[in-house]
Each structure stands twice: as structure tokens, then as C-alpha cells.
Image 1 (tube, one colour):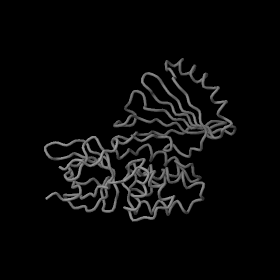
Image 2 (image 1 turned 60 degrees about the vertical axis):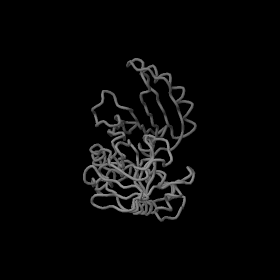
Image 3 (image 1 turned 135 degrees about the vertical axis):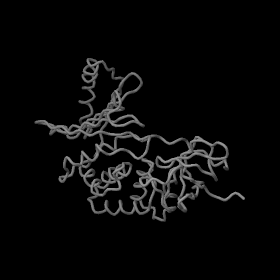
Image 4 (image 1 turned 45 degrees about the vertical axis):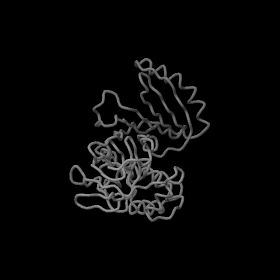
Length: 312
């Protein structure tokens, strides 16, 4: 008799950094099916699986029902219309569907994190202690820190968070912590942080390395991001990345009135890069408030949804 649900057998003992707990909602990626067994990945760890598994390639959400030494039992969350997915996940966690809760779940889904009620409640509680204008930036940065291997160390998390948000209590130790941290997921970019200061400006340079890579091992980073803070312009962010054999740039300014001057300066930027041997294909200038680097990053898009149609 086919038992409803999905049963996982870890290839090795459950890793502490990606341990699964009952009550979590997790993102499951189906890698393949062979000889009656499926191979799936959750949080960077690979499992063999049986039960209600979609045909690969596919991703879906599941609720962790039970965890034992040798087996993890998942419940497939089916019948979720796209617009109602976050509401359904909040319900599966036993939480009220308040706007701030849904927004936090959305940020966690964006980074493909397990949705854990205790973590959600802890982050919401910490955010409520802040002024409303600071909550969105706090939650974005705090969720991103959950994707790094420092998340189990509260002291390092506090140091990194203070640095990311530019708090008064921030120290160079926060930058050191971030430069030593690596992502838990194998398909997430790794970032190196560098601070610079001048007479009229200061900011950071970020090196975003290739997915599956290690910091500093690429001939040319996946992207260069610069944040420049000046008295006249406020915070300006420049994101420079490769697109084939050319470069593309995204510039984000603090206010709408700065868009036109920066757009006019695009020609000079193209000339400077051309002198270095690089071709800038396109440059986009927009205005919005960005509080930390994690808001500019673009996590890997999940595989398109496919309904359950396989039993293994």
C-alpha cells in the first residue's frame, strides 16, 4: 500500500547547519529519479526519497512532519494557487496571516530558507522593537544572514548585522565576520566586503563571486557592487555585472532628482571602462532606498512548478 507523503533517507547524517525539524516548511528540489528512487535536495543537502515526488526538474514546498535518525517524513503542500501560497504556508505553520508575517515569509522564500515558526516569531519580535521605518531593512538583512554558516552564532550574527545596517555600534569585526562567512546553499553567490573612506565620501566595495565558487577564486567576479555615500548625493549604488562578453550596469540613486544627472554621466563611465578594455552594453539608473547589499542580490530562480505525477 502506498503511504501518503514523502520519505527521505539522508546520504549522510543530517548536517547541523541544515538540520530539519518538525513543523518547518521547506523547499524541495527534485534532481532525478532512477531505479525507483528519487534524488532531492533541501538546503544544500541531498537525500534519496520515496513517495509523492513530482517528475524532475521540479521544485515544491513540503511540511516536515517527523524527523528520526534515519528518516524524514514530509507532507507535500499541494493545491496552492500562486497568489495564495504564502497565506497557505503561514497556515501550515499555525500562524496568523498578518501583512508583516506574510512579508517576512516572502523574504524567506526568496532566499529558499526553511520556514520555521520559531525563527519567524523571533525575527518578528525583534523587528517590533524597532521604529517602523527601520523594520524592512532589518528583516531583509537578518533573513539573508540565515543563509550563511554563521547563523548558529548569535554574537557573530549581531556583529554582522550591525555592520550591514550601518549601526553606530558597528565595528570592523562585523566586516571580518562577513568575509569569513560562506553560504549554506551551494548555488548562492559569495560576497567579499571592503570599506573605503575619503575626504568627501565613504562606502563599500563588494565582490560577488560565481555560484559554486569560493571567495577570490574567480578570474573576474560575477559582479562588482559599489556603495558611495556623499554629502551631495546621499547613497549611490552601482551594480556592474557580466552579460556574455559585455558588461551591464545598474545604478540606484537616493532620490528621483539625481536620475537625470547620473544618466547623462553614463557616457563617461562607458568611456572609462572602454579604456580598460571592457564594453558596457547597457546602464540603467533608478531611484529607491537600499539599506544593505542583500537587497540588490538576485537569488537563483526555482525550477517551474510541476504537479505531482510520480510515485517512487
